[in-house]
Image 1 (cartoon, rainbow, N blue to C red):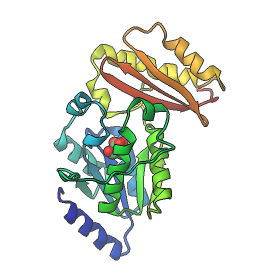
Image 2 (tube, rainbow, N blue to C red):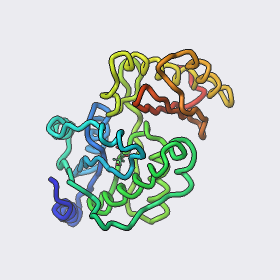
Image 3 (tube, rainbow, N blue to C red):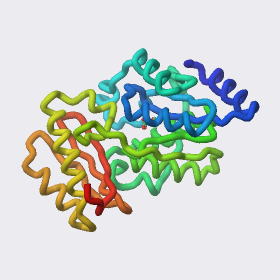
Image 4 (tube, rainbow, N blue to C red):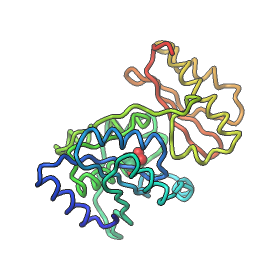
Amino acid sequence: MTKTAEMQKASLRWKKAGLRVVLVPTMGALHQGHASLIRRARRLGDRVVVSSYVNPTQFNRRSDFRKYPMRPAADLNLAEHAGADVFFRPRSLYTSDASTWVEETARSRGRCGDRRPGHFRGVATVVTKLLGIVQPDVAVFGEKDLQQCEVIERLVRDLYLPVKIVRHPTIREKDGLAMSSRNLRLSPRQRVLAAVWAKAVRVAAQERGGAVPRRLRRLLQNVSGLRLEYAEVVGRHLCAAAWLGSVRLIDNRKCGLKR
Ligand code: PAF
């Protein structure tokens, strides 16, 4: 389905019939992490909508937007197999004269918010649009994007939006790398480094307090081809981002757990 009006009509019809609607918002290039979100959504309601829209306003670099992987046919197949009722793929969610933005101003600060100016404004705006179109009872988001979860929870609370936000645990590859559509852009050598990165995040998070980011910096300082962007403890989590060439990876792990 591509038409916003059709999507909204279908959703309102389901809700009128007493069905519980669950939304899984994505930007496509679906992987097993998304499949897990969709299966969770299936257990949470009666109708599952998977949206797929590469939102231009959340990219602070044009090149990142242009290179974002797209494979709609494979996505449709994966979404249906994982249990989606509707694969909603709007062509655009911005008219040329769109002049309304949604900005969360506390949780969007620090970490990715400081390094990607405008990113969370784009996310908050598009998620508000998707919630308005689909009007779900529940929306499911992956915890890999921890700051995004925090921003969306705050926006839903502050705007009194009648939707329950469910966080779903990060799904990882066998070597520990958090699944992400951007992993598709890694070269074979970068993919090896990405596993080193994931292990370093896991090991550093076993420390406590200020030792956590220090340990991560030390573990990665001699890894050539990988540049640590930030490492911070926020609440109980180590949150970190790194660059491998032009690919930016993020991850987070609960601190103080032996794994
Ligand atoms: O996490 C994502 O894929 C995106 O940020 C989202 C929530 C679909 C908004 O474009």
